[in-house]
Image 1 (cartoon, helix red, strand yellow):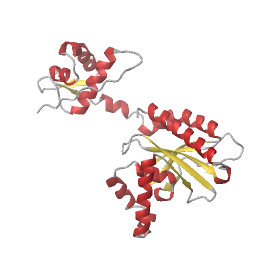
Image 2 (cartoon, one colour):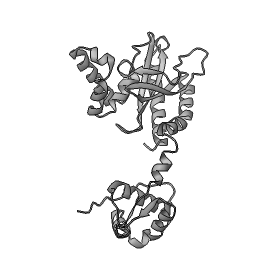
Image 3 (cartoon, rainbow, N blue to C red):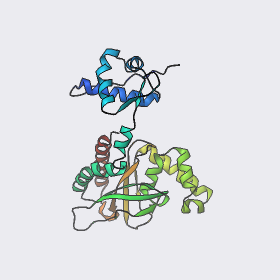
Image 4 (cartoon, helix red, strand yellow):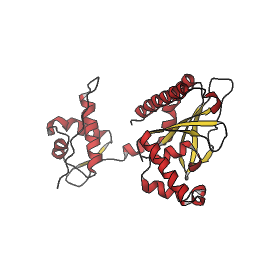
Length: 261
């Protein structure tokens, strides 16, 4: 049975019909995953064959589409894959996040850092220092245990349950915990998942409070965590924490938009 997937259309500020058609074609072929004829593609994206003819020719000439011996049907070439791997996804994430993170430090007057999963641990891949004379600093390239950090709980909260359990089964701290402590930890992760952020005292550094939010779509290949570490003594009012949360969530939205989330 032929799988038909209607192209999702959203209103845009500026119209670019030719570009829209090209993107519709590539997104559709990516979704169906099998070679398709001109008529089948046209039907799948709710256009006529004549509407997409020139775009198909252009995409084929530029190397984005290829046609084999399968009745001349179109399929995606490896060009998109090649382009996407010129730089790693996390290189691009660091690049687009640097200015929003810098703005976050200026608004909150606190340092912030970005971390990812690396060999079942939390890896700091980017940080921006506070403009204040005295502030916390977490060096890039540092690893931390997932189960002992606020960012780790946030990262675990956006994983599938299956992936989360596999990672926790390899965590040296988790393996030593009692059944009750493990249960409480899973409940804490579910609360983070529901809230969309986590704020808690650091288990690794006394007198520090960490605030963290997820970056990227749940359980994707480009998951990371944006966090602010604050001296607990500087949180002299609930209003200050509210402002930090507002600022970090706004930065989260900005970075997600930049990475296509």
